[in-house]
Length: 364
Image (cartoon, rainbow, N blue to C red):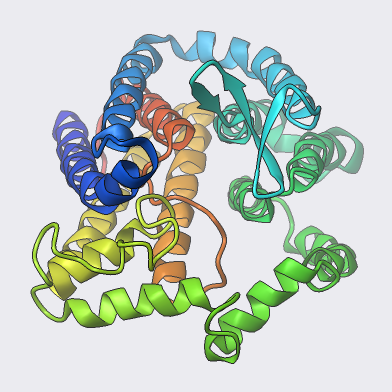
């Protein structure tokens, strides 16, 4: 198990290093144009990275019982923060979305905090209620309420991508806990009208779907981001244009240092760089799954599973959006994209995962 922890730490260290370099490359011109400091985003990223490493070390040092005891109180705190996030004057609105609470110069995204806390809570719930997981009153309803309330608050921000990510992780955890497939089918059928409304009855989301299906129908509008991302990946070729030599980040590709960092990697480091990043994530997920399989503590096993599911889904969705496989979602690439809340809480999640491997013997 020690070797697995070393492997995970080394891979994450490489991803963090590559991410830091690419964030500077992707953001330096934009930062100079807007703030007169080409290192503006890079310095903030390093600050968030430092905070994340401290919190990761704290998460690793907690006892398993302490983590379980904190599950419910922290879930309640996350609910309160999400409610505050919807109040004008407290939250910070960007492009019509209220996803951040501003504390001085630092922005905080409560939904990122919620994702980790919810995984901890659901793992504790499954550990306590696994034998009753298919009982409607004791198993299904409490889990549905705990998932439904924060999902509704996230949708009100609005942030469909994070809501989808949260629900997907919950589905994986509950399915692994033995919840009958029929309940998922009923839930999917019941949610279809709501999903249709959320996607097709709201103009900007409908435009995103149409742009995903045919970006060239609106190349200067909703299809612009997807087209520029694919251009970046296309011109990169096999070995790329060279580190720092990419052109799409020069005000062509929006969110180059955040949601579309993989496109910048593809342009500057080519297919080789893109495949290297994908290979690192595959290896990381494989090592993480070993911890899930080897754990004999039910709470920590499901906690590990939730963290693996979250990181895997966000990596797949981010890379899938960059290459045009999925509609634009606004999810960062774990450990690589610029984004303080995402980076900090991904490192906290990593700390909890490494914590889950303490005292476990590998049995694969």
